[in-house]
Image (cartoon, rainbow, N blue to C red; front, side, top):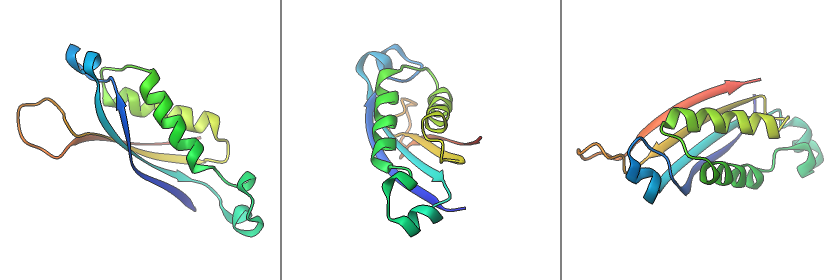
Length: 119
């Protein structure tokens, strides 16, 4: 299956178990792979025959900012559900939500949750 990839979209939002994470917010880095049959778009050169990745980026940004969850797992599940609901051409979505500043008291690049959902 063909895919459209969005890599490392940066969003500032309020998610986390600790109260200060919800109050202050932090940066999240989100990547999505949208599995779509792109044959028709490849032949027609029409955006209507594809999934507009700008729309998906704005959906991710809006959903992530407008909701507050304790767990990355819940955020990832909600994003997968929303992408599949809004974009009927997407057959499957693979998502990674990275939290670069996870407050664990040890040095790390990030923690992340990876999730894949399909229709």
